[in-house]
Length: 336
Image 1 (cartoon, rainbow, N blue to C red):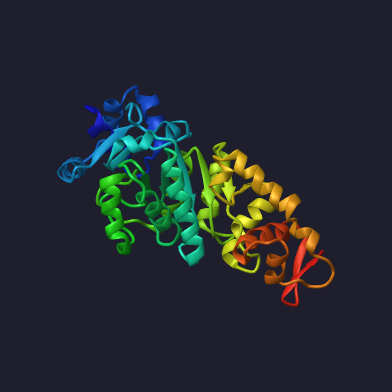
Image 2: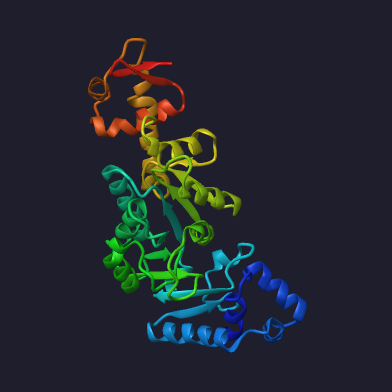
């Protein structure tokens, strides 16, 4: 950590990010020589020193990419942050990790599903990574925090780790500090700007072992995060939604195009035996498709025919619609 000030002096200089930083180190041989080449003003140096002092007073730590505590998944990403500011339980950063992302305007059922899924993952030893936004992110963090322990969730912020955004999540922020960790590559005290959210999405995708996308519009930050995850070689899972809901277009399109694996429950990840049984029920014993013909059949009638509740068959009907096997007509379903 003795080189921290020099590293931050470079990184806080205009036009210097991870790529330029590495170019300067390569050109000048070491961080001290690179800083000398910048001819920085004393005021600038004092400001960076003040940032470090402020961070120390708030219990914020800096982790450089040569530190053993730096998240290993992120270290494997090209042009990863050279220095992260971290507030909370650092041990959370190197647990098995699943990112959960989606719209800020999620439905109640979408948020409940994400929260329950998150909670189950934590029970299986995972930490949950998200961006602490309203809606899906919030439900993912809260679901993780319902489980026992103190390394459940990682919040990746677009501003400084001390800058709470959105303000509605102030209590969530402090609960994450107590039982998880908040990280950022931005200077302490920095207000989140729109341009920084895409960069934040890079690191959400980079930190995880795999990613789950819930409700999300086709053109959204969550879809960008999912694509980053694919670029980084991470598996992407998507939770299907009703085709008529714009918030389902994102995950549905990923499933349809083969860019994401269908996610319907925690059993898709941990309980192969139960998963096989569920698939058998869907495709053999109570095959909904066998009950649908050219005359529209309502959800309630279908549920009665296969001896399930309407809620249980809704996700199966969505999948059949996405596969192009059935369509809605006159308040019911018919074969395509």
